[in-house]
Length: 356
Ligand SMILES: Nc1ncnc2c1ncn2[C@@H]1O[C@H](COP(=O)(O)OP(=O)(O)O)[C@@H](O)[C@H]1O
Ligand SMILES: [Mg+2]
Image (cartoon, rainbow, N blue to C red; front, top):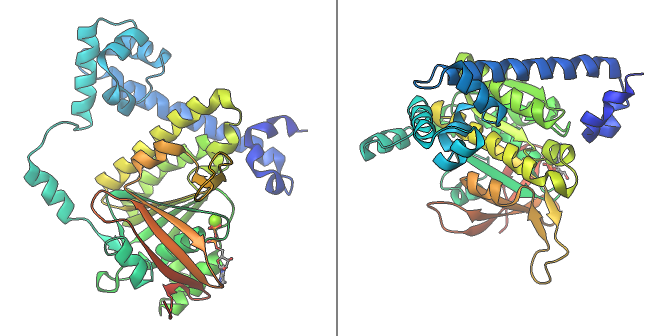
């Protein structure tokens, strides 16, 4: 019994057979309830916007506009059509949502003030830091993609340790939220890496809040939950390892690709907002899929296509080289040149490669 809920979380076949399918069901239900509650809260907020009211909020909800961000990003005609509103009303609602989210014009000096607060976390390798313009940056989403074993998760662990270092050692004297979607988080690695830096391994563990996401809805919910933890705990880093695997397994088949992309887009929007509002670093990993249609060059491409491409501020492609060596290639950045560097992954963690 209890198998029927299985298809929802079919992403983790090997793991789910181990224990507690019953436990899983209650968890599914809990997640669904929590999502309902969050949506309800968001819809209540929408109803409070000037010129909306409960009836219109309900209309908006029924046409799929369940959060403020979706409204703020909507086009006037699109919204008017979808929720059968007059275009004047639609424009007013969009404007109100934007004001609510404080979207709109601001003096460039405000932008500069915010950018001056940008913090960086060292990767552990000076060369990799240099490639990224001095480390992994706050107020931005940094994506590392690459094949299995290329070092994405090792760097995730390393950043969760390094964020704890004082500023002068390349840290942010803060804590980490680690969302593990592939069951590859290892506390032992946190301890190894902390020891190698002279940090107390036990303390290092206490400073990393870990959650497993077992489907894409759950993953999105965890980000909402993370906001609470971030507010109360001096969190300076969010890791999602990996960003796309739950989306990939929840949305198989071509018909649902557009839905998947739309949801992934929403997820990334929320991550960017967390990064901005709380001035934190967001590091996400991504798998690559093979592209048999590519005849020349590298026949792989990151999952999530241009959605992730647009939303990630920095994108790095990781490749395995000989032994501990890894090659990192910066492929997308608003203010840095494309480039390549070599680092290594050892027992101590991410380090510079001795010979280059
Ligand atoms: N304890 C360790 N000591 C040294 N190297 C390790 C250790 N754990 C993992 N690694 C290295 O990290 C690699 C796995 O990298 P990982 O970050 O998990 O890849 P992925 O890109 O798939 O997330 C291993 O192949 C190994 O080279
Ligand atoms: Mg991994």
